[in-house]
Image 1 (cartoon, rainbow, N blue to C red):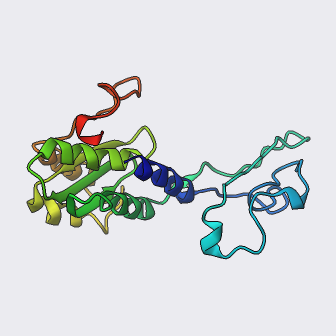
Image 2 (image 1 turned 180 degrees about the horizontal axis):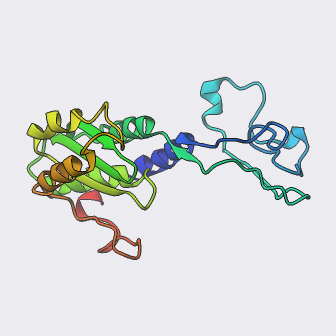
Length: 204
């Protein structure tokens, strides 16, 4: 499971899109930011690598405050919900006991319906929930269900958005149904820490 979390953190970095920076303010990738302190040759990454080889490179960015106190860093990074839902489902499907999964991502919730080949429903729910929690921001709430009749229910939201009529009330109703299924051993408490000993028995 550790490798899933590491992969998840990588994917999370990829889906955060920074907006509004001019090339003059931010000189591209990995190394030279505002008031650059490093020469071009010191940028992260190794020239001559293929895209596949470069996937092993570290990511590095340094941005300093401009000398004239002009903080044009653009708007806050936005999360691409479509990419995030795809990423979560792909990480979940790396678990051998999961046969099928569908993921819906809203502005602050992740809803996952899955089919697992195990009798230990709590363990399966914990694996699925932890897979999602490893890549989403901490403020997200994650709900899971192994009720496969809900696949169609979750799919009908795929072309909706936050402005769709009655969508919030409808999703709240779906969550109520999902919570009838096991939700795993893991749940963030009010302080943002994981309850229990930090790792369920099924994940050891």
